Image (cartoon, rainbow, N blue to C red; front, side, top):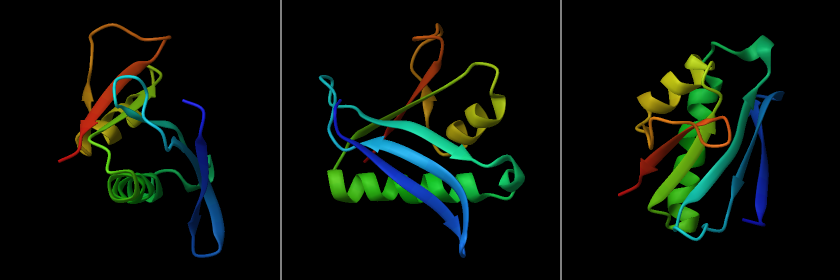
Length: 107
């Protein structure tokens, strides 16, 4: 993975967060969401969920990807619950590089 696409997350004119994804598949045909961050003062308002939905749609349409991967720290249950609620499933019981890794199969 060498091509990363940074994206700002806005609500109206307020910068509320940041995301990064790869626009090239890895050797297993996975596309990765490398970061999704929402400023603490904007958390809990649904901005991360909406940004993630739009980013998934963008990746499906522009990259025609079939698999999207994302990781999070095991203690970050809020991220884990968000990803799970949008269809990301844990890929293994163990950690990979200290993170829980989740997969979304795109149809």
